[in-house]
Length: 439
Image (cartoon, rainbow, N blue to C red; front, side):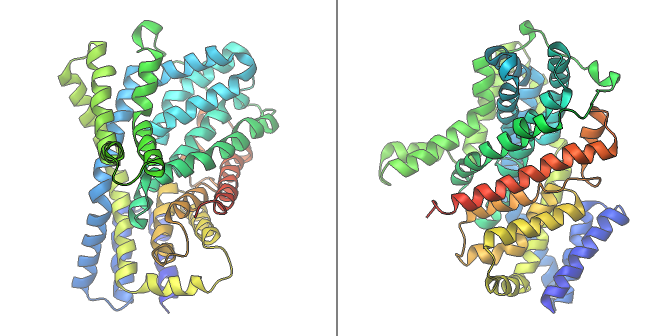
C-alpha cells in the first residue's frame, strides 16, 4: 500500500504540472500534503514535515545557488564567457574547433545555469559556424553537450547540489568524480555524435543572429575571465585533493578545508569577480549590486521548486514510506546505482524537468544511501545522468534548441533528444565503471 500511494502521488504531481499547468512549487506542496495524509499523518504533522523538508533543503542551497547566480551574472555581463570562447577557438584552430567549443561549454557551464549559458553561447556558435562554413550542428552540439552535462552532473547546479545535501554527500568528491564521468560523456555526446548528426540541416533564424557580440576592448583578459569563472571549482578541488593527500591534523589541510567549503568558496569567488569583472572594468559598485540583486530574483522559482521537492522528500521520510521503499528496493538484485538512474529516467521522461526528476528521485532512493549500500557521491551522479535522459517535447531545453537551430520537431528529436539520451547512458556507464574503483 505505501508504494501504491507514492506512485499515485507522483501521478498526481505529473497531472497537476503537465495537464492542469499548476505552478510546480504549489503542486509539490499539495502532493506532499496528500501523500502525508494518505499515509496516516495528521494535518499538523504533515505541515511540520513540509516545513522541516523545505528548511533542511534550502538552508545550504540558498547560499550556494544565490552566490552561483551572482557569479553567473558577472561572468555573462562582463564578456568573460565570450572571451574564453574566442581565445580557445583561436588557440585550437579550425581543425580542432569542436574541442575548443567543448572546453568552452564545460568551463562556462560550471558557473552558469543552463539557460543562461545557452543564451550567452548561442550567438558565438552561430558566428563560428558562419565564419568557418562548418555545419551548424557540428559546431553547436559539443558546446551544448558540455552545458547539459554540467547542468545535470555537477555542483553548484541546482539538482546536483540539492541531492548532495539530501544524501549528506561530500560536495568536493562529487565534483571530482563528476568531472571524471563528465569527460567521456561530453566527448561521446558532443564531438563523436555531432559527426553522425551534422548532415541534418540546421539554419539559425535571422533574428537570433543580431545579438550583441563584444569587442576585445570591451571584454576582460582571458586569464582573468578563466580564473573568475572557475575559481569555485579550483578552490573546492584543491581542498578535496588536500583531504586525500595530507593528514587530518595538517595546518595547510585545515586552511584549505575552510576555503574549500562550498559556501566560502562561492563567496570568495563572487567577491573576487566583483573586483576583476566589475570594479576593475570601470563599473560602479551600485550598478554591480543592482545587477546581482536582479540575478537572484531570476532563480526564485528554481529555489521554490527545489524547496517543494524537499518537502515531498521529508514527508516520504517522516511517514515511513522511504524506509518501506528502501527495504523493498534493497531486495532487488539490480544495482542501487542503476535503480536510481532508472527512476530518474522515468520521471524525466514524464515531467520534462531534469531538476524535478533528480530531486524527486533522491527522496525515493534516500534509504538506499543512508543504509550504506552505495556511495552517496556516485548515487548523485547516477541520478543526475538519469535526469537528462529522453529530453523531448515537455523539456524546455528541447524547444530552445528547436527554435534557435530552426529545426522541425522530428529533427529536434533526432538531435537534441538523441544527444540527451547519449549523455544519460554515458553517465550511467561511467558511474558503474567508477564504482569498481571507489571504496
